[in-house]
Length: 320
Image (cartoon, rainbow, N blue to C red; front, top):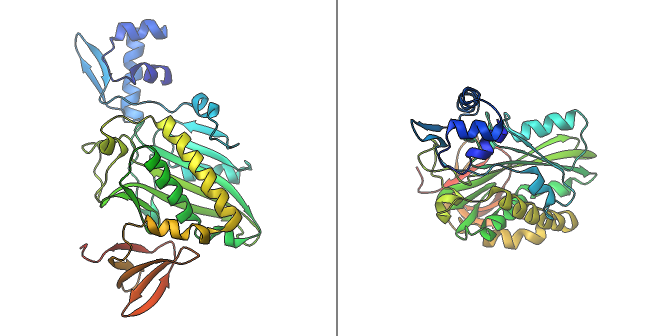
């Protein structure tokens, strides 16, 4: 199916006869492959008598050769899957099977993409970025402090370098444009944080998804919507790898504390009245920033408090 997708990815009409000639198969074989694309990968295809077939919207497939040739990989081998439940889950399986990090898993589509707090991440084929990087951390739990915020900062810089200049951060793991989500981070750990552990850095970015393509229960946007043009995902991945390498290097050497000021400058809700959901009673207060470990600092009833934890969520105080 991959050769057929490469021929169709320009979004133009191609006749079944022409496609068959290029691939050395019959028109009926092309028809069967198109049926599989629609049924198994949920790729919408327009069929017009006398004109042929085209994708509902053009896209660019991820390309291992292009990514491997990029100087931004920094020794992180990459593999690309057509479809997977989630890239984080795939990385965890590979770690359990003995694959040695660092390595990256990308997918064209996720069938069970996950965000924080068990939320689903809408993951159509060939449009967005579903990215997981496996790293090994040995003997120093402090390397985990603020790590998700460091990753978010690197992700933000990659988006800004790609033209999405209005993007900013929302504690703890979201990137927004205005009040609309464009990207998110999900970190998962396996092993013993006090000895040797593996951390899976999962990143989801709405790259080329259009507003009418997905039902999402919160305001969202995409790089394509912000820039008004189709985005080269391979090029964006190279920029993301570059920013991750730089920021993770700083974090590894000095910890999150040296990035704290930069992170706070990019926090869209700095000084805002917010509600923190904790699983118990909600906490209302004003965002003061983050501490050296990445915990959120809030003024609550006139007293500064700090909160951290994977199940915490933040929303603006006037957001019902």
